[in-house]
Length: 478
Ligand code: UD1
Ligand code: CA
Image 1 (tube, rainbow, N blue to C red):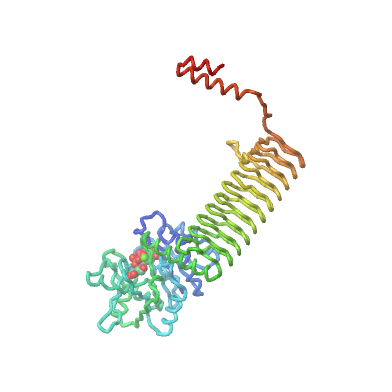
Image 2: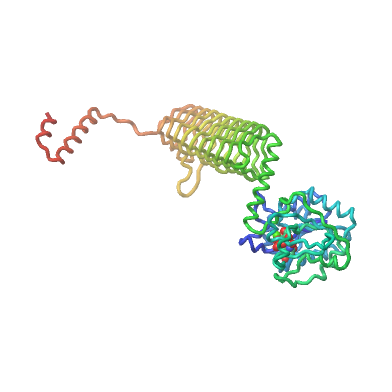
């Protein structure tokens, strides 16, 4: 049985959005806590929500519909103790251990939580709490201990004396308690404190008074117990999760030239022997295959890259599919809906949107391809543009297999170029081109003999006239 508390307002975040929805390394922090709860194979997971609950429900719709979590509403949020009390009616027939987790603790590891659960079961305590020693305990509840070192209670920072604030052992907000004594104690806590809230940690002091057996376990890695209260905490957590992700990837066989500056979301997958250069971001559900090279200053979001893909410096790749052996960049922009088939090549300063580029086809320089379907073995010359938008609607360009497009061609969509055709450089293609044809859609060239020489003389004469030097003017004319 796990209870996750996520109903609080999260005032210190200064955000319109519920705190637990803020992403850490690409995922809302509540997802990490719920993953942990699922990893413990708890028979039930109760999630207490309140503030901004519509959004929390939307985010977790999948887990709710699969029956993995049961939602309990706390309204208004009167404190962590009150939040746990809201689950009481759902647990009327339950008498075993309950693990309580804060929804703002994305760094806690499943092993730590299951160790705590085991220790609780073995000791037979009424409450087992997880504490940590922090260099800077600011903001956390402090653990009070008696002369023999026994825990006597928890004091919240805002209620603590100056001396108590010097205590560096903190309450991590992770507890295991037997359901019956827990609810009995929760009924007795009172909101007599600086915040006027029902504090869950007050159950610890009460348990001591009532002589319930208490156990405190200290976390080995204080990093895990970071609670996210402010955006500074958020940035810290981001760093820790990112570090975990890059460490995992390196152990799985990915080379990261500089893990410090490589930002990879925990949701991304990267294959073996792929090399990622510094200052690159891999975001969301991106999957990168084996043997790829991803150069510097590249951002890849929610995209799928096959084996052996080369992404040169300064590319942005969003919601796209790149099949194996594709090469992209430098300075390419692949916008949503781009599908590059095996061995396709997109070069520098090329933008592609909602387009399919066939096997082995190339657009190497300075091109825009939008709403376009390109077949196999096509060569798109430098500076070519598909004119897909007439100011009202978007239209398609179709370029079939083995077409050769000369540089600086414009395709006024909708338009189709049949297989094997050649488009003369500088053409404006407004009509469909039958297969195997040459299309020339440009103005005819006119050469005016001697024109340039005459113009040069006129220019010189005019400039001399301006300076009013008639004598020299004359000599030049001769
Ligand atoms: C809490 C503990 C503190 C501990 C710290 C660890 C209390 C009173 N204090 O403080 O001893 O050191 O966690 O990080 O518990 N929540 C609700 N309903 C509410 C209030 C809060 O569901 O009415 C949820 C929040 O959404 C959050 C969690 O409970 O996920 C903790 O609340 P928060 O306000 O962050 O508590 P802290 O002040 O950090
Ligand atoms: Ca907190």
